[in-house]
Amino acid sequence: MAFQDLPEFVAHLEKHGQLHRVATPVSRDLEISEITDRVSKGPAARNRALLFERVEGADMPVLINAFGSAQRMAWALGVEDLNGLGDRVAELLDLKLPGTLFDKLKKLGTLFDLAKAGPKSVRSAPCQEVVETERASLASLPILTCWPGDAGRYITLPCVFTRDPATGARNVGMYRLQVYDDRTLGMHWQTHKGSAEHEREAQRLHVPRMEVAIALGGDPATVYAASAPLPPGIDEIVFAGWLRGRGVEMVPCKTIDMEVPAHAEIVLEGYVDPRERRVEGPFGDHTGYYSLAREYPVFHLTAITRKRRPLYPTIIVGRPPQEDYWLGKATERLFLPIIKLMLPEVVDMNMPAEGIFHNLVIVSIKKRYPGHARKVMTALWGMGLMMLAKTIVVVSEHVNVHDLSEVAWRATGNIDPKRDIMLIEGPMDDLDHAALRHRFGGKMGIDATEKGPLDEVAQPWPDEIVMTDEMRALVSRRWKDYGF
Image (cartoon, rainbow, N blue to C red):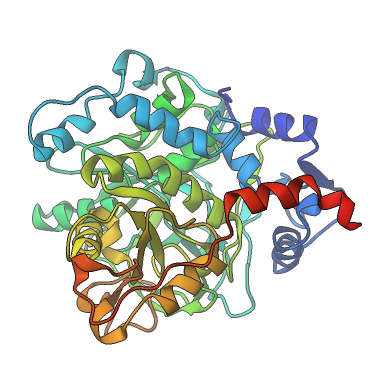
């Protein structure tokens, strides 16, 4: 199942009872956010994608919460269940890759079938049915004010396209954008992200203007790919093509030398001056707190292109669970096989909503030697953006990492704090307000595995209380006899 664009995905959601249309006029300032927050956190039967058909001051509908459940997220990526994503990646990697671990990692970027997954260039596109250059203005877009303390209105679901000024390599990232006025935006690309590296290269090479394109909408796989923390060297558009089973159609922009998805709803063309900074924020973020105001680059608009009748796609973030949690859960399932390739002892992994991605990672392992849990912790901290994980809890292979009650029981009962907690310092997420200082702070690893002869504990480890299989089977057979 591969969708050509957002309207096709919306039609699929509506057909399967996963879309709620709101015909009542609503405000883009706070009202849509409050409605969406209640729906995303309410009963599962009420948690549906929302299409606001009449937004005050706008001539286009607003789509939100489209990725806000496990089922909708799975459909967006062409599977019926999010675990199917890991199965697809596992099949991709099951090629008996030769060489050392380093050789295998280098090979990952070449595994995609470029004949099928590679982008397809086109000369005309739906995203350019309307072209505005001389009087291009952000005022025509129903950009939301999400939370009362936000510094302004924010674009929250963009695909931001940049190129490395030295190599020409493309990066597609998802970075929030604060509206300063009708032609400028605050560009919140964080220091650890791909486009920030492109900007550093532009500064090094004294490039006066760094061209940037911002696509809103497109097929769901491409929107997701912009949020995925892909290993260096893997093109997000090729990755999206692999997810879809066919290449993404791309069209040249009108005022800059950049290609964008042909089936995007809206495209903003412009540039960033690498020397320019402006205060961006505060913004009500996925941490559940307002991220602090800091200086970030500024995007200058040169053109808006769009469909004749576009949808405006957006999300809100805030105290979890929100829609971004399901984007993150898809990443967790997709990357688990890659982590297993590098760390074969890993059984499963969970990054729960309460941990907002980087605060808590729970991983189960096949423990085989002293210090094995610590080896896994440090290895995970060395993998790409996993370096930002604040707390890693390691449990034994038989533990269900998705059962937070079980994990809490074992993580508190199976540890001696002096022996089983490892504290280190390292890079931290831009949004971590509790860090020692901005982007740097402490990390904690917790070895919650059972301790035995391998660990040379000072006292015998007790057996876990488990009923016999025979008695469990007998009681199951007689359950109705007991009057239950």
